Image 1 (cartoon, rainbow, N blue to C red):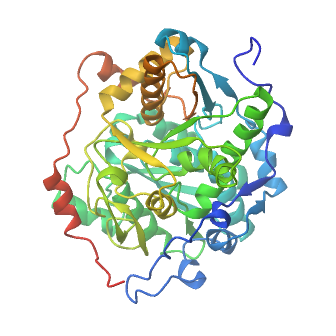
Image 2 (image 1 turned 90 degrees about the vertical axis):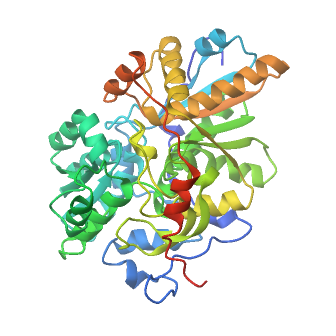
Length: 454
């Protein structure tokens, strides 16, 4: 890559199609089930929540789906995103490895989330929907959807997990700048929220609770639909613009990744990066190791159970077969709010069961240490979520230092941490703690699974 730290950015790198990994898997994932009948969910069951175009994408097995020009026009505000080589980090580590990161923090919302938010807002507006409800953990998804709704004339109502609502007030502010209404979750606005608060007035909230509130409100008005920032097939597919661009940029750089690492909460950022590379791996053209990284406080891959469960706390959603810690599991209030989800994408869960990638879990202090090292070498302050991937990339690079291997490591830097400096304050002042998740807590939550006879 000569002396430049990044590839040239030009519009030719921006894909015109989303990639649907379902077309290339050896077997399809188990279908969502209706919680009452246990029958596979059909389009009519999803119509109260999603527009028909997104429902069609959710079940599609077409390998590619064209991106409408109206979406591409908004994407051009920040895409293509840069692929950087972390030369200064490599030097600080003394590693022979070459570390690259795909930087999604250049988007208006500062993360990868607008890749699907823009698409979802467009398809809802196309169907004549006037209002979207959603949940948000750290606030990245809520701010992305608020931004996207502002581009297509939609109202936006967001339930933000209480722990993050208190920790990250400026995330709420940016959502409101883009016109959204923001509630702390659990809230007094919904029946689901009021029930939680009656049982636990000081609840820190969870993504499962916030999903319940957003879904409940979406079902009350004909002009309203629900929008989800991760987990579902169509959301993961929209994010593949990340990996498709990275493939093109790596080809221009004359490199091929040996290891790909990404953080996982619901899974969309990780999937968006590695799905196009997996296509090439399944075709026998490359052979990278692919590694998911999750928090030890919410380890759905590494300690959860692969079974049918609700996607939300109140049980409003269909049953999804996924790696789960139990739908009413409330993670400790770690600062990586976007990784505090009790379950994992059903598609990724299925692929994990097939052995298509591996997973590890890391405590937040190790991750923030990696984030600080990254900031002091590369100059970008990462959001708490991608510090998990950075920590794993550093770990891999140090292994290369021991073995002398010159591996190429690719990681997803899915967002900047400009709204997360209070978390860095706690780390730098020595006040941050790692939460020990007992097996008893996991076992207790798993006893309350719906346990369908399928």
